Length: 198
Image 1 (spheres, rainbow, N blue to C red):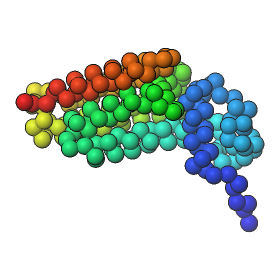
Image 2 (image 1 turned 120 degrees about the vertical axis):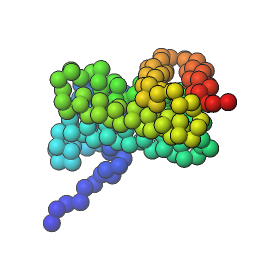
Image 3 (image 1 turned 90 degrees about the vertical axis):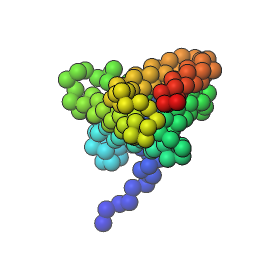
């Protein structure tokens, strides 16, 4: 009979996510993982197969968390545009939170890995593509509902929003800028709301 694992898998995945997000794939050593996860190397490899597999698992967890947050915000909003604006303002508010807002883990992964890394970089790019597609869908729905004019391109609006969010989160990496991040987020949100047909 196989021995039952003595660790809590969701907790381990979250701890690994926090560590990788802060230090990156290459900056995180096996000893770092041992200490953060309170697991021996054999247990880590038995559970995940390799450090790279564990990192890929945390990337998927990160993207799923982002997706859920976005969908919850959208579901609570009275309209598509107000939902997107609320989501961006929420990012700004998180700048002063605990933990504070940090650069997107997917973007950090792309910056850290070479262009020909089909595993880590490929996964990060694929997950970013899904985020952009979700923004396209929201702007498309806003257009169908008559919130934004027919001459606006949902794909173009989605690209700009993604670039602004990435920039906002990168800016938030600086020390003592929480108030500025909140102001920037509010400006981005206001621009989104300004798309509304009056």
